[in-house]
Length: 390
Image (cartoon, rainbow, N blue to C red; front, side, top):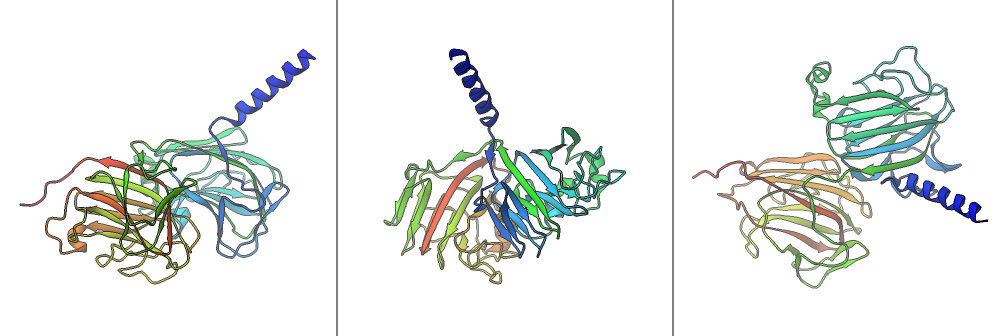
């Protein structure tokens, strides 16, 4: 009996070690809870796998944005089928040209090319055709760590490439070169009109270098609340809209990258106030957060610098969905990326008539109407790069 128990314990430990290697599941189960349907495609859960029937179009988008990671999954596809997995993709635009696409086809070609299974679509052919025949399960591992991308299909390495490599970039037309691709974005399962299944999706993220968390998930430590509408419950920082409802970071910042996720109730609005002198009404720069998905971009739509600069596009998701926001503030240069889309960038002098905008100040979260929720807030300090004109 002792020997049986020992063997059982060893098996359990071995299995736990295989699972507890930093990977977290992404499949989502029957409710596909880690994913959002984009477009009119039909996605469901079938025999323990995410299934697309090939009807309609669009894609299945991950709930979160990822930067450096290793992704593992299995897939099978119908004969003659076409699908793919988007990596570091934006919510809008041509994802395979702005982000990356791991190509998946139902036919195995004689000679690998940039459209074969395992290719970085339209950019890099795999070394070998390692795919199994249609309707058989295939195992994939893709690592995106900084500029390096490595892919393994059914135990065979397809490539291990540096997206910054000059020779690699010279072989691709300007505008979709490897070095120009996004370094952060969503994962996407594509519907190109074919039946396809994905299972055992799991991901291991690498730490974001240089970032520090701004929210501990349980309290308002490090922040000062203005108004009584702020609370921290269940890993979410929540603001109830009202007159001058602000949450002010307890220290000043200079140059930085701020990353966070936010979610709005129907009709809600808020903002992120940038590097302002606390309690001053001068030089206010508010990045707008609003329930306005689909609205034409303007000076008060999501991603705008309120009253000063309109976003190129409105990239906000509908109320109830989490949005990913990244703000980069270097001296007088500002860049805003919403859901992976670069919606606003330029000099503060182009966007406003400010004379000597402040180089230091606080960052604040604003809740104007409805309920605004925040999570995964972190900040990376950047060095000063220029001198202000005299």
